[in-house]
Length: 105
Ligand SMILES: [Zn+2]
Image (cartoon, rainbow, N blue to C red; front, side, top):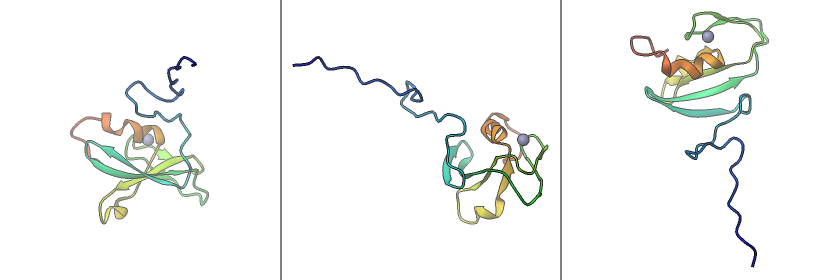
């Protein structure tokens, strides 16, 4: 009879049981739905625009340079696709910390 070993936690598993993904681990081109205080959002990682169009990030109001990997998000409700926005990945992550009084887009 061998002693039962405690199951080790993976390096990206947090004590509260929610998996913390390392930066860059999500697969480009695959949509995921994120829950936020202001609703559910579909988020897509974009590995960089190639057509030379620059987008303005609504988080910091700076340009997202062509070719820079970023995220596109839109509300996960019907018709939300019309509200697609391009964000810097970091700005999207910090979006919920911007506080009240700002547009959610
Ligand atoms: Zn930004």
